Image (cartoon, rainbow, N blue to C red):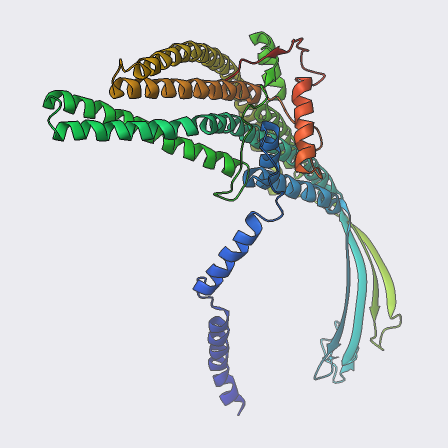
Length: 513
């Protein structure tokens, strides 16, 4: 019987193994159509929830405020920073001793019986001895503290503090980029709102003139070549105007998306928005110092350098002997014990000799990592300095292009007025009037666009030097209060850190778009 049972043991073990393997297997399970529909509905309900309604024309500062509050990129950066801060709050717990409590119940189907033999005669005793109950209750409360792990955890907590600061700098960078996009899109949307009524009127006049030329051609009132040339020119004007109309619609949709508003949400902009007042640019040397001091990327690289240095110290710390202190309070209900509860304490010293042999390579690796971090930061500093010069050149070019567009628009508007007077005197053709009107309209649009490009170039310069156009605290403020705070900060001018050179700048009014 024992042999049969022993021969069946491999079969039973194989069957149990097959059963466990089949039970632990996991098959891919894609989302069902109902689950996907539920997720989409939940996302739609959350995306635009709890937004303050638009009340009146949206100012530039309100557009900034709505982008900060509702734009998902800004909210994502804020959540990433919050996660790093939560991890920083948990980091000190890794430095505490490990304290564990356990309790259990132990049972046996047979007695724990033993026999012994004499070390002098080698005779085995025929008597058996029992030193433990079949059923026992056990419990213990113990702590373990490794001094080496404490030091490593302390350095890791310092690294986590730097990671939290890095998350804050990345959020600053996200906000800089977001506000730069909002600035350009806002002024383009203002141009679209101003130009749209005249654009619709000009489109109607162009289509009417084209229909007139086609009717005259069919009536043979015009030479075929002249009629075709006129149609070609009118169709080209119509194409340009329709392209402009489509672009203007896209601009409003883009600004709406940057503000985190639902697609197609109606909103208006001020018909005569307040002109932005900017401080004149400081000399390039001071702008370079500002950029090297304030840019989020450089601050992030500096914090990353500290993380690398701490990681090198952690690597050296792991090579030292580790001292472990432990203690516990124990209980065992075993009736054969003289004392059922007792306390233990101990200390242990451990040294990994194989890891100690890697000390030279560890030192070389640490030195190489520090050099890499410094080289990366220096390369980034060089790129930042180049960006400052490029941003200054782009700003100067945008100013020159805007001034030229203003002069060209003045000329085109005068031509359009003269064409209108000739039409009133029956001295000009419909084609000339439409051509001059469309040219004046496109010239005005070009003036608005160059102003938007000028504002974008100035926002690019502010982002390039790392200038924060926001108040220190924005949490908990409603849209209008936040917009008022942004307006106050922008009116006060740059707020420079103590380590940055102070730039004395007077406030000059910006040219109207």
